[in-house]
Length: 110
Image 1 (cartoon, rainbow, N blue to C red):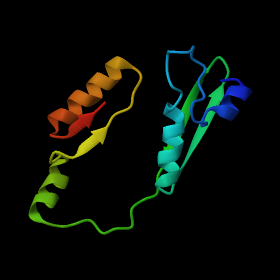
Image 2: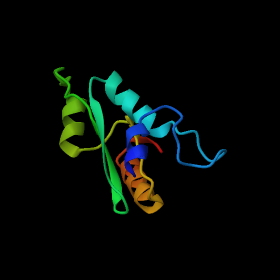
Image 3: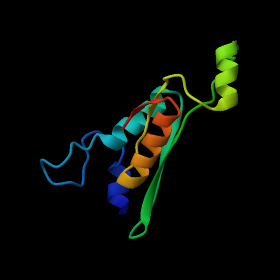
């Protein structure tokens, strides 16, 4: 991204796409979710090389519930139907991650 684009990237409805090809809400939603959760988001971009967006969320201070099901699940690293959101623009990578998580008994939203 060039400097002007980088400055506006988190603004709602900002888009570099042509009219009718996107709403420009993606990075605004990332920023809003991070802030609402007590975290923050950053963008690193080098023109002609690529862009990295990072979302930082605070660690939970809550004590995990301990019961037989939770302990066994944690030990085996298998989900109990929890929902995981997967955001990945590379279709092959996204498909692999979704399939792997579904095999581990997670509900996956793409």
